[in-house]
Length: 331
Ligand SMILES: Cc1cc2nc3c(=O)[nH]c(=O)nc-3n(C[C@H](O)[C@H](O)[C@H](O)COP(=O)(O)OP(=O)(O)OC[C@H]3O[C@@H](n4cnc5c(N)ncnc54)[C@H](O)[C@@H]3O)c2cc1C
Image 1 (cartoon, rainbow, N blue to C red):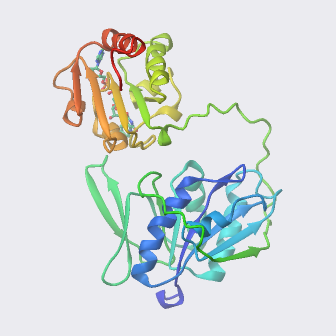
Image 2 (image 1 turned 90 degrees about the vertical axis):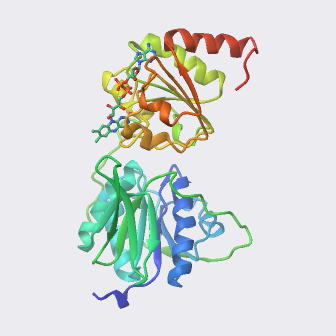
Image 3 (image 1 turned 90 degrees about the horizontal axis):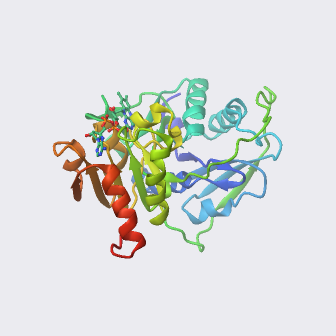
């Protein structure tokens, strides 16, 4: 296929329990800008039951929404079935660009779609641009975030996964109109996934939290982590962690901040006993105010900190808790 046969931008709108993931609105925000440069349409595809708030995708910038409608087939996150349906749609629509959120599901789904289409895929993009040849430039960090690779695809559609929280969400406009097209699902592979039991949801939403209090390898036990949790609770925030702490098993990977964890942009990020390795900074350096506590004055975390506290977290964190409780300190 030549590029002329392809036109328009298609974004995958991930949903869970009928709620659309916010990354879809970020993809629509960026997609709208790219569509303006390419002078083409912007569409979204969503798979699942009628209860999904599909109109929201139109309010957020989609011209058309393809709703592959079925309650049963898409009730479990089976990448093979999702991929089969999305590949069929892409083969019919022939969009020149396809974007997925780099969520756990998106990271698992997009390569399956790309491989079925014999197309390239750039994973974990942090920026997308259009060059003078009207081709997509896919920007992503490489070599532990030390360089930014600019990647052009020579296959169509040009496909990327895009990190969550990288782009601003598309503005909402209830006056926007668009078309919702219902598509019949296909399911030739039959469901390969059966949900036996759902593990209790820890309800961690670290990526959306306004305050993150993060702990590093300086925390020696699960009990010691309680002071970090207490500080986070007092500030209405979530607990984050460095990979080194996650690797001890004291805290789950859901809390990990960084290159291979969550990317966070809270108003306040408090780093407790975290050295500030580039892979950690990659996930939090865009935070509003960074407060770092470390007993090593030369720790690299202080290079990105707005407030630096040199000292022992085992003394400073309880002192902060005490001062906040006594209203001597307001954060
Ligand atoms: C491909 C790749 C991906 C990675 N992805 C990530 C990622 O997503 N997130 C991530 O965090 N890391 C990631 N890493 C690991 C990263 O390189 C670092 O090893 C890790 O961030 C170090 O964690 P840390 O700062 O908690 O531990 P350390 O480097 O051991 O630092 C502990 C810090 O705590 C201070 N300290 C110790 N005790 C106290 C105390 N009582 N009071 C105050 N300060 C104290 C020390 O001075 C030190 O600065 C990745 C590495 C690779 C190679």
